[in-house]
Length: 355
Picture 1 (cartoon, rainbow, N blue to C red):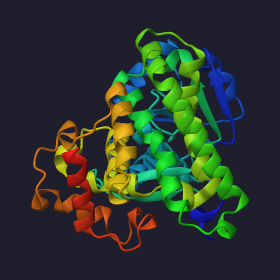
Picture 2: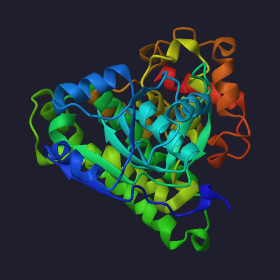
Picture 3: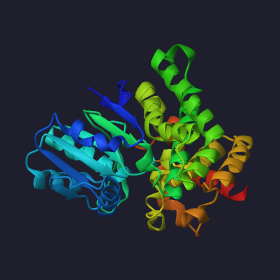
């Protein structure tokens, strides 16, 4: 059994709309014992909006999104029927891992719009020191994902922008992987994944600027809703349909490599992925595409240079932890180029830095 190759679109239920968090008690009715997994800041943001006490035990993660922390929380919980995970991507991934350890369901309540963690059965697993470890494939997708537009208008702009960057990668990574795939190997679901990634890109290129303005003005509009759903829900569909062909390639490999530079640990996931897209395109010599994306990045606030990710030393030795990991056999840059080397990743970075 290989969960990475199965078609797994996402959450069992995706509930989206205005003020739907007020229906949370009804969504929890089928479950007896509820355990909340959250973070200190995440839970405060939720409590300020929800304004009612949750009469369930609350367990806080340590910020790492590691298997070790998930096991610790599961041991502390002991018994429960469902995990109610409230927070950003790392909190929600931790909640999914806790539910996996305990073999129970998980309900996802995102506190911000920044990635597809609330929707997918996949988690980004880190070591306790917050360096990237692996992609984890859960046996169960979330039982329910609750996307409350009113609540999510509180998303900080930089997280929203990072979510856009993370989601733009869906197109460039699946395109980079599948354009080398013979037509007869492009199954119906791979083709659906490609099509969904293109729809996502079109939505983001068309609606992101307006969506950012709407977020700043605290207005729920069709553009804001489309961008939010593209980031949280549709992004997970691409990998769900196309499986390994639609999840991760050069952009995410560069992100994972950047996690080995301590100066990037406080940088948002989507920003590092967005930079990784440019590196992937530089490696495949798609310079015109980089220049088009640079205009979009500058308009939205996504990074085009390593200095914007708090990386000031760009010589080969300083970037070696990043480039070595991005090109290693366990990473996904090799889905773009099976012979990728650390030196080639470094050279691609230099191209991006020079533009």
